[in-house]
Image 1: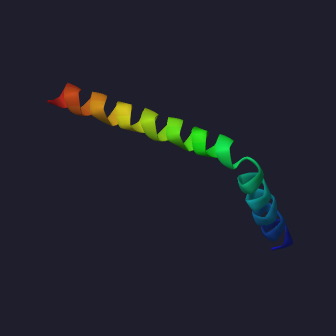
Image 2: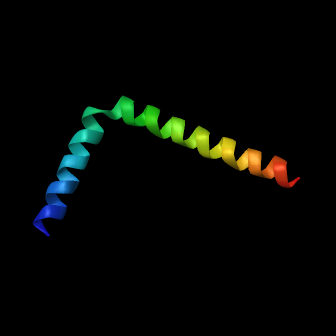
Length: 45
């Protein structure tokens, strides 16, 4: 379980340190998913 704690600590440090970059990554991922869903919906409709 020590590895899990270390992984969580490192993840939090990276999240805080690279907050803006991660926000950009999540935004791009969300846009990509939305585009895929819209394309599928348009294709089915």
